[in-house]
Amino acid sequence: MVAPGQLYAAIVIVLLLFALGVGIRVLTRIFRDGLERQRKRQAGEMERYTEDEEYDRGPAALLNEDAAGRTRLTCRHCGAENDPAFRYCGHCAEPL
Image 1 (cartoon, rainbow, N blue to C red):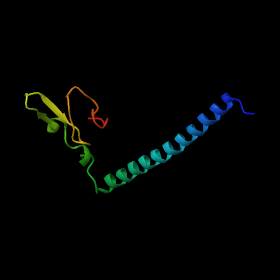
Image 2 (cartoon, one colour; image 1 turned 120 degrees about the vertical axis):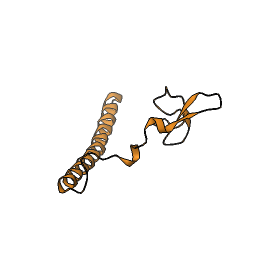
Image 3 (cartoon, rainbow, N blue to C red; image 1 turned 180 degrees about the horizontal axis):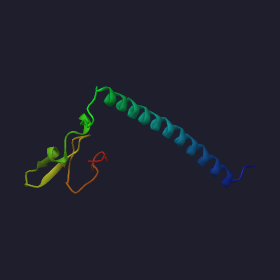
């Protein structure tokens, strides 16, 4: 019979190996994307410092005032209004 400690250790090891496999795939894609961008910059197809379209809007563009005159921050992901002191959306938990 397998002891509970051994079963727990086996499950943890399997989960860590799975996470490592996923992490390696993601890091490989990031590395390949970096090499491709570097190649494009060297070939003159891309400027050295380019704005990322997804993050070109700053927090100032997302600030709104509610009916009481309080400043609110709009989430880029779900559109919910949040207090400007928040770092994460109170509705979808994505970073603001």
